[in-house]
Image (cartoon, rainbow over all chains, first blue to last red; front, side, top):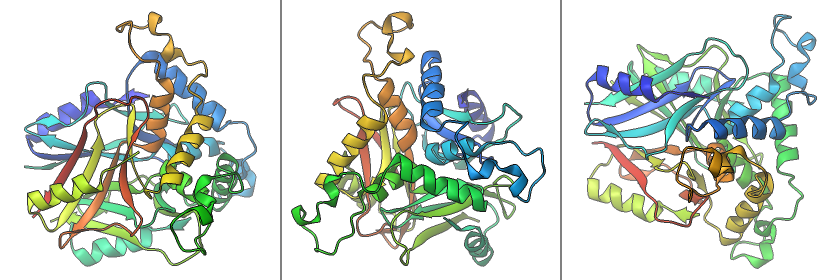
Length: 128
Length: 128
Length: 128
């Protein structure tokens, strides 16, 4: 889990937009965007919970790489897709007088569900 | 799972909007909108996973149609509502120079969780 | 589960905006925003389902309050965070000619996953 708030705040400052909203969208099918508290022990709970809910080593058809039309070194990551589907790929947050309308403990987080590898997130600041 | 990308791309072209964002919102409580890879074997994994996570034949109060104030032919679809709640009803994606800001394998998908029946999805293109 | 539709419709009327969209965003890490049918028996199914999926009394690291840098009266609510993560924190809905583009049974709902306590939701009406 990666806290996106520093990057989002910087993007808002650079855009010079005071009122409108911010959209944050995952650029991958095996990462997710969700809002949570950035607390180290909770991060471990999330990992344990998702591993229990969607065991990576269960049998998934998507993981029979040889039966699919794709490169042979494709990762076996069906569980990552299922987790991303549950967590969601985007959030939208209002921006009022330069302040993101989020509560004290809320951080927009990128969830790495496969990888680790280099990832991209789209942050859009819209308004005036 | 229905891939909405052809319809979304057509709507963007028709709107003539180059920069802004696209919102996609389910119009039903038993369908969901989520972003995933459109891969045939993964679609089967999604079905199996959701059926295991939320067994359609479990006991749900919502399915006691006779005890509710509704028509007697109402479908027994509590599991569909629960799945839609987890998957989510909307996504928002930035549009830059006419290009949706999505990764190579990302498709906005409509998840049919009850039906099949005729369904509506709201696609909004906003910007200039 | 609290039905936000009366508040949302009032906010739209007060804003005097006819065309654009509405964003609804949770202001807490232990509440969620999702769209569902507001049906009393389904609300009970949701409670039972979430309690089974994420048992509140399971062992969670986040609940070892003494090991965290936080006040000693912090609630033990790891399960609330996990549920909020799955349900999501925001939805976006198009507004056309003053009408929210939602289906007949769709209500934007606030899910109280911890509390009960006083909560805030951000509703933004954007457009003209």
